[in-house]
Image 1 (cartoon, one colour):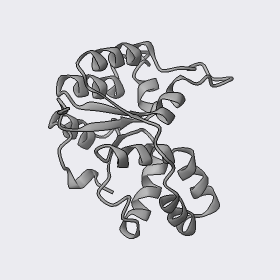
Image 2 (cartoon, rainbow, N blue to C red):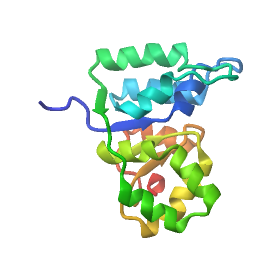
Image 3 (cartoon, rainbow, N blue to C red):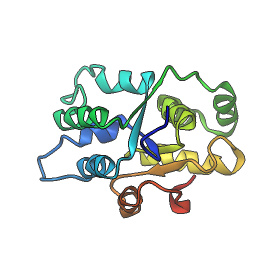
Image 4 (cartoon, one colour):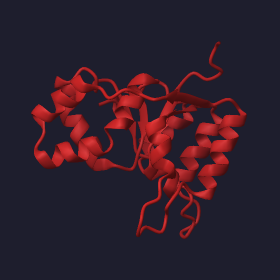
Amino acid sequence: MTRRYEHSIVVDTSVVQAAGDRKNGPNVSAQSLRTMLEKEIAIAVSDGLREEWYKDRPGESAKRISRYASTWLAKMKGKKLYHKLGKVSPDASLRAACELELTEKEFAAFMKDVFLIEAANEADRRVISHDDNLHRILRSLAPATAKLRGLHWGNPERASCCRWLKNGAVEEPLLQL
């Protein structure tokens, strides 16, 4: 079956939750999701990511994805822009290589969201996330880690990410690790 989209992006929970925050008017996360829909850039979703989106977080006010993101997701599915990855196997060699290079604290941050990278490597090697700490860690590892090199990482709060999405999430060296 031929894909109807050119690229698919793994969207971190930080983005889908922030998309519903309308306290200060329209936000960059919601705009990023809108742009994906308009430009027909698919979302790549692993079972692990979907699980994180919907799990309860005791003590936090945003327990699930926002209503805005839920509506957006339904529209993406309706336009066949939902790339279901299913269960993505843990990448033991990636995890081991990173463990050797990182401090204990950095490795804990890496492991918290490693499923994003594993999902992106199963899809089109693209992620959008607000997690600048993980981005910094990944950038430091990329030169020596083939499975990270060339992975696109965009933060919706950065103009470069907004331009990248508006251009269809094509190859963009500035956003590659």
